[in-house]
Image 1 (tube, one colour):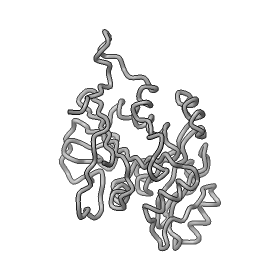
Image 2 (image 1 turned 90 degrees about the vertical axis):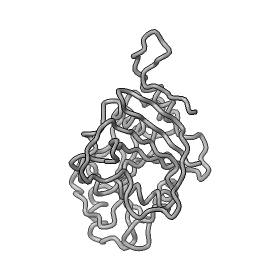
Image 3 (image 1 turned 45 degrees about the vertical axis):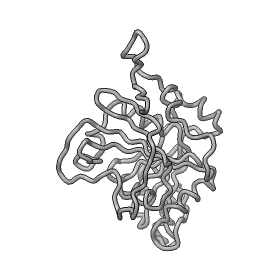
Image 4 (image 1 turned 45 degrees about the horizontal axis):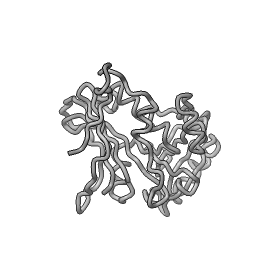
Length: 256
């Protein structure tokens, strides 16, 4: 049996005490040393019936505590890797510096906020958005060597840094992870979408999955948390942590 670590402290007289951000940061700390020199963590939310979204967005199946953990995971990361479709659907903005994590990031040799790395083959992105024009840390764009030259130029003109991680138009997931690590961005976090997460899973480069199980039912035909071709052999993960609040389960699984 694995221990259930509650979001509220059940051992104290104040049984409804909310965990501090420092306690969450300790619970979700990246490994001190990763076998490959980097660690890719996924963070997703799913309804009880497997939906990763409702009406195209994840917010309706999330919660305040889910968002606290979401913010904590971002605050621990060197880079947040996200697919272009998710950038468009979720209205991504630059990551912000958070005073509550400033000392922790400084002690770890990190900048004030994680970089955002957008994965896109076509570079069909609005480079006038604040994500590209006014981030605290320059936004990265991961694409393939055959990406449209005019779109590459547009990304660079907007202030983004373009990294090539594939010989064709698309991005090779393993090369993307390695390219980011080569820039010192070893603590990696992906927030999807489902297609990008599926690509990382298929390539065997996902080290950890933080999955919030929302006590909701949506029915319909919404995407699962990971899409794309199925694995020939299902990948088995082991439970590394579990928190609960108001029926939400905040799970953390790692590769065996």
